[in-house]
Length: 403
Image (cartoon, one colour):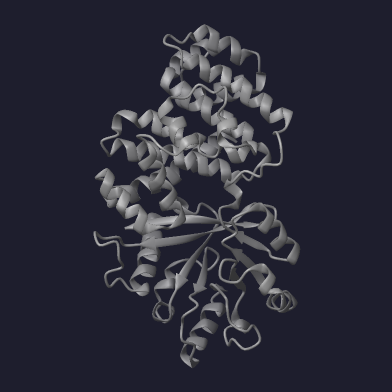
């Protein structure tokens, strides 16, 4: 079973909610009789059993519903302020369906129309919809102006899906779209060199990472670098204090020895990403944290377990180009990372590439590609789901510790 989430942003690039994607995978990489009813039941059941806080925190869940599932009471297990019901584009509309939608709305649920391609004025579910989703691959912005205008005039919330570039995001925002879904937020907008502030931040952390990559790293040198930056020193002491319980940490050097070199490298990387991400959507930081944990977990459960530390750093630095708005080879310049990481992030090859491919497929909901890579890695797909949920939880807890 696969369950993944894709963020949905408002026009300030704050997360409004997550669309939840589901697939029960099998060796044939086909649905093999799994109906949309069973798929939705899997998502709703998973949410109910795991708890919303495990998957969507305090945000809203967008879940696909077909006609069969809409007619059942299972959806009412989830609170109306947490669930947005996405009605699939291929549902057959009849009087019973309309009455059911009216009842759900009376209970407080919001209704979204998925992949809207109908004539706005003719489609019978438009009057009951709170949110209308336009798939910009199926219906490009230049073709939907009249429908967008009518939706806005009717006070509908309109959502642009499959937004893959910042240019498309800005154009959709100018047209009046309220919500946005796609991977544009995790791609660099390369318009020149990054700001001096972020470049300086990268150099500062690069000094630490370079020291850590020496054959015999010096705790004293690491402490001296950190002590030159009161903000970095504070963050590191805060992290160590949260882990040391009642032990009192009297110095930066003592804090470093308490953590150990491998853990220092992990946290220096996380603190670097946090600082570089300060001018970017918070979800980019969340994505980096999820990937670092997810990649490490995948490696532990495969024949790549000896590379789990490198896999963790691979996930963490996988969005560095987007944070710095630079090509990846420039973003990683002067940072001493193992060749196994740079081979993947810069040259798209190497021993850790299957982990990167699997994570990307999972995030995009490409379950066929994810299944194939699981087979290649000899990875149990049930374990993969558990690893993903744990990575989501860990990322959320880590962000709270760093706030």
